[in-house]
Length: 120
Image (tube, rainbow, N blue to C red; front, side, top):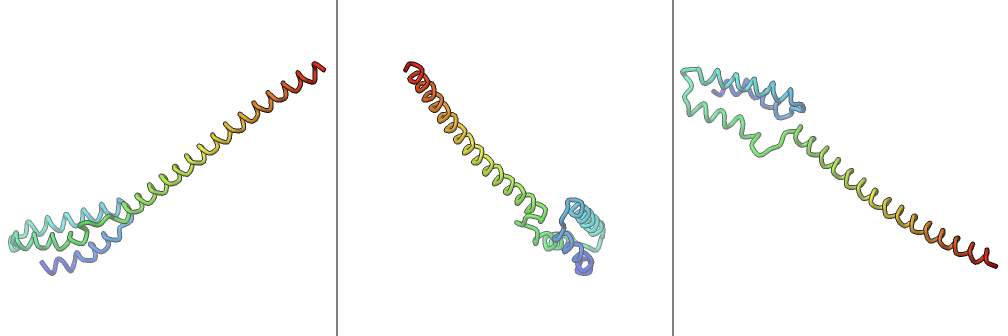
C-alpha cells in the first residue's frame, strides 16, 4: 500500500490545490479508481485499505476547498455591497422626503405671501 501512496500522493496534493469543480472532479475520479483497484487486489487486507483511505482523506477533513472559500468570499462581498446599497437607498429616500417637505413648506409660504401681497 505504501507504493500506491507514493503514486497517489502527487494526485492528493493536486487535489488540495484544486481551484475548479472540474479539477476536483477529476481528482476524485482518479482516487476512486485507485481505491477500486486496491479493493480488488487480493493481497490488500481490509485493514490496510481502511488505513490507506483514512490517511489519504484526513488532510481534507474539516477543511473547505479553495473554491468553497472563494465562493463564500464572493457571497460575503455581495452581502456587504447589498447592505451598503440599502443604506444608501434609505438615506436617499429620507433626503427626498425632507426635500419634498421643504418644497411643500415653501409653496405654502409662497401662496400665503401671494395672498397677502395680492390683497394689498
